[in-house]
Length: 399
Image (cartoon, rainbow, N blue to C red):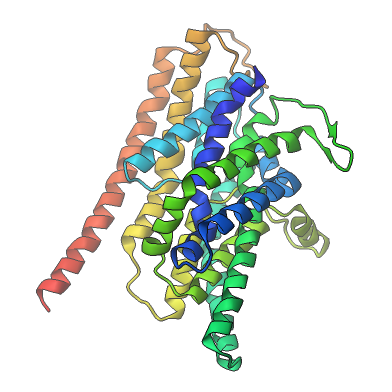
């Protein structure tokens, strides 16, 4: 029965592996610096290690945002996030697994009448901005250092490319580890409060209950990498970046650093020891960090014509993705509870008065404003896109 409830989380993990692995090795595979088989094996191994060894931090923050206290609720929240990612991807809309799971958890809070931890929500939303900004900053600095190193080290081109190929594999392994450590919270974080597994001793090592869940989620991510990520990697390598091998190395390393920073409990504790604010341990969108890193390299090269469509897509995703996931989670929770009689969770602070549960009027009350917000955000996104397109056509016409 527990495995049945976990299927939605495992499906979400599979989609994450199939898509986000391209952010780690896509450029290396697309440029044929690293073979797909080697990249997939390295990514699978290190994403599992990162999830098991360092996945607790980001998961804890999601737990503070909303402690989903029933397996039925955890299943439905993960399903809502997975369906949001799937349908928005099919529609060609910008989407983030991180933002989808956050929105779905907020939808559960509304449904069960639980208060939203505004501090946790603020920390999470802040990283949606700081993540891409940090990616751009790291990429700018690292690309400068790579260029200096390349000028000072005079070596044969083939030997330099062999070093670069090795560097891409190391950066990819670090990126996969950081992806597992940071994004496993999106896959299994909502199941931690509702599924209590006993610590298991495997002889040479032990796994706590949450670590066993993280391990299962990481296996699902690895399955997505091995079974479906080849096409996505090749697409990213050929179409998204179109960067040199040096720039690809910088983008992968920048993304890995950002994800690692927001999942490292040791680094956050070190900040406190030296008198600085702790680093929030939250899941970060790897795709948006990659976009930020690419923009950082573009700024270093002096590119002034920033693509407003890309930036508008990211900004609109901050609103459309969590709102859509939240509304879908609310509706699915209603049907799962009332049609199938499955417990989806309860309020930690129940109201004094007792009613007959969630009514149709309450669904309309919360759904209509949310849908209007989604529509408004998408219209803004379309306006920005059309404005950019019109400006480009005008420039071409008057040349």
